[in-house]
Image (cartoon, rainbow, N blue to C red; front, top):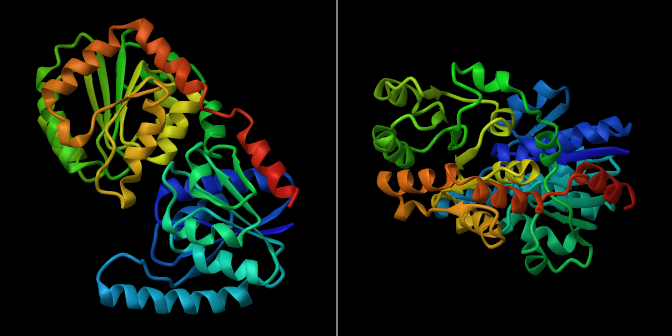
Length: 351
């Protein structure tokens, strides 16, 4: 089949789409990506060897004027999509406003259509497409309450497949100049980092005494600030890390509640403390985290309750309790589908 994959905006939409596309390519399907001309997918997707077709569709965020511009671009994008999708057999959308006109056009052209929802609280674009697609694929049981489409399957996040393949390797920790035999906390606040959490972390680092070691991926915006502020040989400050590889070789993770990060937590059975970002649409990171904490698969601290002292106490409590770490790990692992990629491809090929 010739398949159009539509993904954009953030890595949480794009990376799972790329991972699925790679699997579809293995199965001899032709995959072409569609996305925004002014978002990260334009440069990221071609790096993985896929053809990319850019669209000039504006975000739905902003004031009345911005929303009007967005509506005009969505309508224009719909009619352009009807032309661009000629010769395709299927359209798969991964959420974000960019997916709406393309998936809708595919549906009206009689192509097979599917959407994938990465979050426990479904986004507006996917909810709007619910009744127009042949298949809805979700990651959380909560999605079954949000989508009315009778063909809704909870199969998981394609990115889980890559996380599962990560291996135990002491050299990963040693490469940071740390001791692989010592308890290790990994802190990851997303590719851009978090200003508010970074401020708390710098105070938390002052409290740390070296009883465990820390790898902190501060993100591009806060790397230099954190690097200058921290001078302890058991704390490593990095701009970015290979998240799955480092997590696999660590004991505890402190992170945001982005969809990709949480799917990796489940796939690897990673004990974690989650600080959901309150600055996202529909507060969806809170609901992502809650989906894990309700199953005793993670610990959550809301940002409004976060202090350096509270974080210090919670990390010390968990990282020194092997039984609790094991419990969180086992419960997180139960939320992952190890056959997620095969299951999704099989469901798509049956359409």
